[in-house]
Image (cartoon, rainbow, N blue to C red; front, side):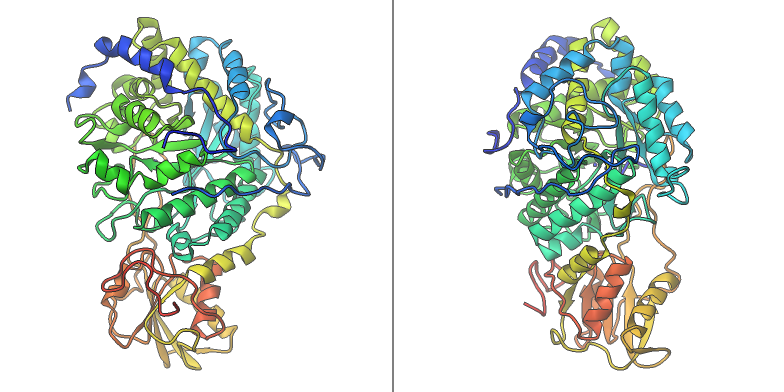
Length: 615
């Protein structure tokens, strides 16, 4: 999800839960006559073993016991405290969905809430500023189930215990606890890596998802997700709106780009399943996105709703392959996109469509977990569907569980409460969603690791960079540059970073020598603004960039498509990111100290998926 400031049988070993759509389907049939007319106008997954972490600390920073079981049977099925898992000392979460016992316990707990409290519990809202008080007040004001941390909510020193994200997340957990709710708050973030990275300092920097598709290494993807998950948990984050499960169609995809692992559905599925396992091992709830698939539509839903013209049959063969695979593997949460599926419901975005969320995602694909909306403050929703908080009611009616980042949280709470009072929405529908939220957060909640994990995984990040960088042309494993190099293009910061890495390897960088041209084309720049705030990622200053042409080496730092324009005597390197570990790995490849380990995850001109000079 990037809101502005996205087979039916359970797999062996995956906890089974009661079908989520049965009771809801009955509600839908009964409520259909009263539904708002205004809205209608317009790959088998690997089972990965888990190892217990040897050192952890509690959410308040105190050391946690190193003993304890990670099995579902060892956990109490009653309420868990907001600052510790149910058994008090668990250091690693179980993968998969909550058990039926956990769902039953959560249902009993949330049933005690008043309707207004239930309405707040299913909303994860945005807050202004960076202060802990602002975040806590947003929760207190409307009884929210949690908050989303956008880029403009991240303090200048995000890892500072007293004024950074640890203080923010602690304040949010405290606000939920003060309200009498004995379960963890949802504290979500879009920390995908690459252009959608909210925390940009103090943590290990990671490239865009396309790097995972280029490396195509499940074990490595799991390790990186676990690394990132541990760092997020140490800051108090409980949910990451990642990984991206979209299958990109290439250069005509304006919104997803490098955020997608590949144009090959199987590569995407492998990358997504591996990352989901790593996040869960770290105690983070992963939310894959953006169902029904954002990689094959050409409209940016931050601005307006998009229309998916493919049939369900076509979607099942491409866009839905990663989602179906992840569902079989027990993914706990899926984010919806504000995309109209013309073949299913031609008038309503999927986020608000019972035919898509219940009929397709729940019933056809068999998803039993948590459905999270994309940002409800996006243009696709607020322009046509959200008068007085109506969109929140519509999303819940459609089958969503978490209403994420509505433009007006207070209006949404009020609209939900009124819908229950009028009979348009049943109280049981609210209980169902609230229980899924509570059970899922409890199932994943573990003691937070010590602060020492923050920013400590550069070695793994460099492994990913080396495994993903893709060479087109030239001789693999040989020096691609001479003893003297001229670095051109890109941003001043990126030129300086590569220059530093090359000099550290004995290369003279100046105005002469082998030309190395940095290409910044394709950088994600979706949506300029949204109602309700929350700054989105924007393109960096590329005043130093030049267009692709003939040079010694051209390096694509985002999507690799510009490399299609390189000259026949020019070596192309696709990097899929611009982090420091990526530049270090690039310097190794340029100087022949390492081979480029990746293969193309998308077609680039005449070079198809799987191409590489090193394969």
